[in-house]
Length: 453
Ligand code: FES
Ligand SMILES: [Fe+2]
Image (cartoon, rainbow, N blue to C red):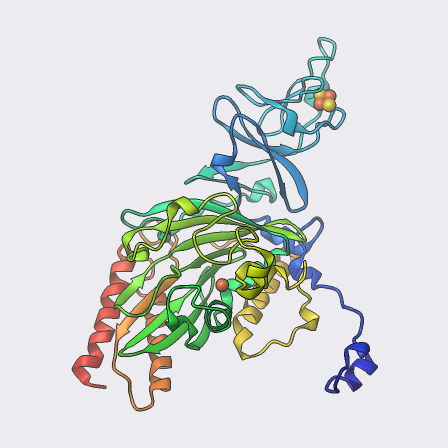
């Protein structure tokens, strides 16, 4: 290490590089008995698209465990340990019955909760099935996704329904993409607004359909009741565009639509993507969620429902498929930038800068909660509600406000004011929160016209 320090700033110093240090296991590892996995297990996690589960069982992997997701012929979902407790045959070759899944080898029958219903090769009166349980997890289907809960059964949380689902005419189209890397670096991308300027615009081309994405915004990061948001504020002509991505801890992210161009007024335009970064194992994860389609987030018709599904989504650079390696090298997308950070990014080798405040903050919040779970002091806060739904904070807002003499200061102040309105606590849980947010944003914009400030 001394040699490396001595040569830190000398030419051609590759020879002096120290061996690669280990990853931050506390934050990144998800397999048993990791503290990060223990934390993530306390939340409902999406496993697959409902369309992937046919009359045949589906082999899945979560938290480093191999599991079989299936539907009984009655339509109930089950999620069982992969290997039959008799002699280990994989239940991916099991046959769904009315009430469970039957192992192909000697016919043992398992209910969705792991109860062994039959061991047909045993003599009548055998009590073996009553003395054993097979590993199983609770499952819930919602809007075309199938979720599982992997934590202590006595702590099972309520299944959260977020306000972003309930937009008029909203169509939620499920999609999933496997990333051959650790979950955290994929999730951190949601809190890295600087990369949209470079990766998505200046370094390659305007991947998100508008040059305004290449304008380096004022950036801020703010804790919310459910996690954190970034706040980016940009000047574009006579408009100021304030955009926030939302992370709901630990691994849900909500993002605005990627075709926003900052040209037209918007007041609290909502979510284009709701996506979990699901931990498959320490070195694999899956983005699973929905693309939202409605007029507000697809006003120019650039979103394409038919391009969303298993291992695909309708915007540039999200998978390793579809383009050649050379094409990806010439115009890399999120997938290439993130997966190539190594199978597990090594935080000890990074040099975080001003741009990375959001990443650092996310790590801090996660570590805080991971340590609480490890110490036995973590408890899920009862969710806030606005009209029965959990309030969320992702938005795009574009206000008409002419430039001021010191416009950098003004743009930053506008970002702060818009964020204060969106997080406003006096009406945070009001049944008409979204309407109040919009009304207050319009009033705020109007104050510039009337005061001439
Ligand atoms: S291995 Fe499954 S019933 Fe024998
Ligand atoms: Fe991105």
